[in-house]
Length: 251
Image 1 (tube, rainbow, N blue to C red):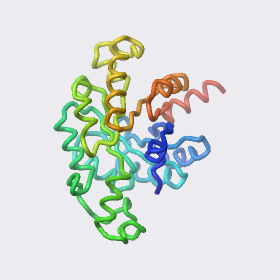
Image 2: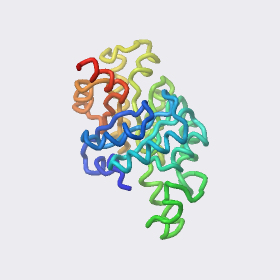
Image 3: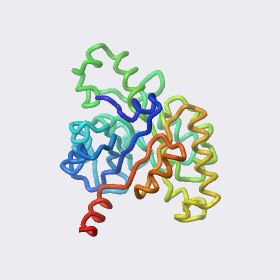
């Protein structure tokens, strides 16, 4: 399955996605008609468990969308299970330290880069897709290259170590959570304050210096346009529940 997010990044093009919080595979599948590149299946701020996430990931990929997923914690199980059911990238929230990111690389990447546990799973066509049939070495290399590890920068700790984190092998990008980051900086929801502007500039500079993707959540279309113009490689615009409510309010 093509990773459109990664492909566009290599081409110097920006990508656009959204969050799935409703938990409906049918709702995810309908996003094929929107022009979006990807959907992030959320297991942090939604009740979705691994079975629900697996169904949504399959629906997204069946609709031609790249399927990313957000883990609910920093743990081997949280990362591994999302990758095994086919997530093409994992966003990991609430990262604080460099050591946590080193652990995430170990969980998310196969040897020699990491120590991801192996089993024939949906990620590799249960051992029967074209890459897997070429052997373990080919599958490991492909998975390490095409499956994204994206720590989320939403804490002061992550921000203070962003240069070291983005320089690490195995880290493919940074996802900015502007709501929690603004709270951590003592300026809740003040997205255009000096502290937030400086933080975003620092994150962007670190990502671009190390050739890593810079993602950011945006609450509406205008914010998405602003962040894209600012230089973010990918903007994640809204989430399905908000879009549903806004649509019915407009009706």
